[in-house]
Image 1 (tube, one colour):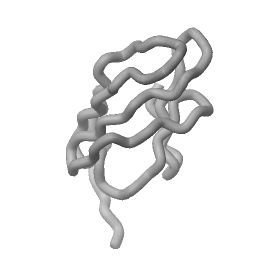
Image 2 (tube, one colour; image 1 turned 60 degrees about the vertical axis):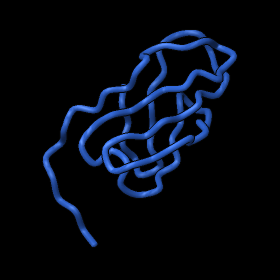
Image 3 (cartoon, rainbow, N blue to C red; image 1 turned 30 degrees about the vertical axis):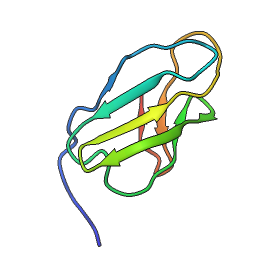
Image 4 (cartoon, rainbow, N blue to C red; image 1 turned 90 degrees about the vertical axis):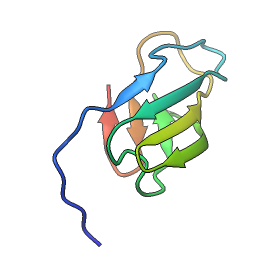
Length: 79
């Protein structure tokens, strides 16, 4: 099944966390939860806590200090 849609803004909240990981981040956006893509913060895999059509909640992994991209295994990157 192919789904075509316009790119809608995706909003992670909060937009920062601690380097040790464990921060719960909610990612909101139309259709953001469709599929079962793995999510990464920088190069590290995040734990998916919950997923619905328009929202994903993840737990951040540990990682370096500084801004990191949020990536989806389908190639989409937020950053």
